[in-house]
Length: 426
Image (tube, rainbow, N blue to C red):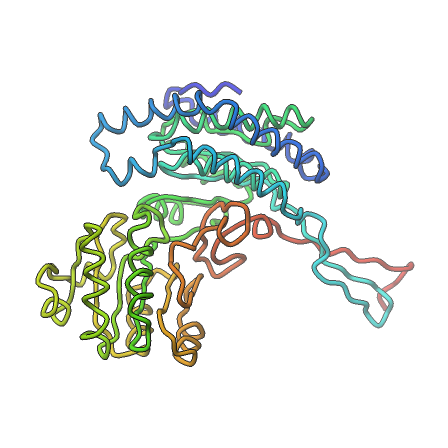
């Protein structure tokens, strides 16, 4: 596949050609055995490790361009690859190899009074388009998950990560060929022109699903324009609620990890909710740790009375995904207030409660309506690999089909198989 940039006027022809190749590869991948798919993934992991220098050189071009364009440090962190992150990509592929193949698995089976035996069996969705920004690791994760689940994937990475994504896709394609599978099971849109995105969103004749990963503007555009079904998540406005019955040391360390372990991921905590009954016991130990880690705190009036370093929080702060070392802090009236605040301002991504009171935790887990709800655990565990899925194609906040980390099983649908014995309907 020629993956050089193309002029804008070629967007229609480029996407049409991607579709033609994708349809040609889909039958072979849909019917491929587990052994062939695993062989391709194992070879891809080997190539990623062996070609690390080439991947890092390609990434260096993207980073240099990002710095020249004035990209923020947080976004550069999303874009950056290093030895550890390349190894994490390869390990993710190894982990996916070790997971059961969902394709062909029987979900359920029952027999009707007339003797018909009906079963539901997992099958690939078909051809998936992934439109994403910045993170080049998405290229490897999405490609590997789609290969193992039997889906052809067409990747449209952001212009910021074009060189990195291209280098990774070439390795995935080489691995597919080695395993005897069509290279076109994984394709990269060979242009940075945004017109290609519009063409993908209209490709109802060959695309079965669109998965957007990126900022609000990208998600809004895809949701509004797509004629293809969309599996999406909006902002990761994740909350940590510190209850009156929380262990102070646990609350301090957990909030620090949820916010500051890596501020650029969608599972990073953006709002801290503090039980009014815990203001004088829990608030300052938690905030002192955040200040120590150079996190900016924006608080309501009760918070600022106790923390002279806190800046005033506005209504906008409760609705903001910072993706930066900034956190908003609100005082709430116990678990009821926390649940109300999350329902009002949350994005239904990931929330956690810190408490030693099991009854309070049960209320929070049962009543908070988000894709991932946790008790005494960092929101940074909102990740497919941490869920044991090997990797993820994204975190879904949809209510249909899949919620939370989207892994192999979530990239399948099912078909109904009906077996009879010359059975006639009266």
